[in-house]
Length: 621
Image (cartoon, rainbow, N blue to C red):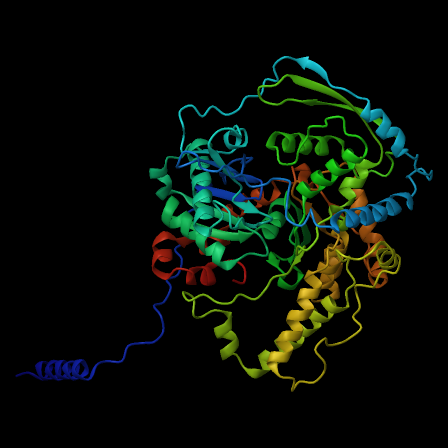
């Protein structure tokens, strides 16, 4: 027997011994493979930006996306089933005993702000007597323009299982369909009513997106295996919900790969800015976040649970006070909601130079009804309604959380190596440094005097006239200087402070100042003040840019007024529609070389699940 054969025999014996003893298996999970770089084909990448009221979807190569109402109507499965419809302009917290008093207090603050500022020519505003306006509007009657309005209900004679977008919006209330908006205020529309479970909301989203891809992008479902998808998510996101959305895109709809990114960062890509304080005023929610060099700063993120629909409802309330001539208008009627949105977009403004009484006219076109023309006289209502964004007590929302921060995630059983694992394994020095940074951030929340939803007019006026300087903090450390403080007490103090801060209804300008104040350095803050980017469709009012710029300049800390050369508010970067900027940024993202390392492929997702998001997400997951 040769020496080589003897060595082979010894190796085989060793292997047998290992098998008998039982070889130790590695405890680390299987390694995630490196992403494969492939040529960019933007025509085969679909960019999806789901909003509370509108879905924007298109190929990355398209100039503009398709905008589809983010609504679905599902046919009743049984005869005699009770009809259900998600509210559009209505919301919880409006019909409380204190709501009307709060609205009145907010309106007083708005009026004080309006009359405290002169017009650009130095003259005082021309008053618009409310009694005169009301008397004129109450005597107005409609005139018939045409016997047919030209608007029709959606034809449901073939009894489709579901209707999406415009067809769902115009479904007749007498037809046997439930109407759902799957996303409300930037979150899944989860509630106890029909269609309010997580499974139902995910099924609605999958149906709407699949329908839009097939009908508007003309991509058959069987060809989606050749396409990839970029999904835009809010800055303050729910990890469980993002995981479910990726699961829908890769496993159910059938894309071959996906990238998920935050709206604020995509907005900076779309506007061509590297750093900015991004304010996204949407239909249902407003988000504020500072982005520096393509990174969303976690501590600066704020979500405000009000938006364009709240301004619409406030405008309707103000018009009713002044004798709105269309007296059968109701907030629970979908067609009336569409009309009120149109009136807000047409008449409302933030231009202090427009004053006095103006006469307008508007048309009412309802399905199966004649087209009507109304005359309308208005005073300051057109300016008061948009200013409610800066004085949110005017919305009259009681008992609801208006301000939200990014909270720590509780963990996922599929992702054992999450931030909790990292915290448990990092050194005590790192933990101490992190705790100090967190305490300093909390000190800002504790010391900040925001507009509270329950405050009375007198205290509101005092807080308005004696603004607390946002750039300073009275205490170096909120939780005390004692490092030996036990962890449960520190956690309780943190929870109490955050809940108190979140209980305040911050106006848009104060939210921006707070977000910038949470940046890490004065240099970053200076950068943010000189680049305030406004996107979304909720602040598309005439004069909004100058108005917001004036508010920020007046309220920014004095220490920064000396060093910030120019406070710049950008409302239409590159003369683009601000509603489409985030989607456009997603399309730009698809074409970047660095994005090729971020793709989560279908097979990888099926094998590794949510771990892929931790490995490949372009932000801290």
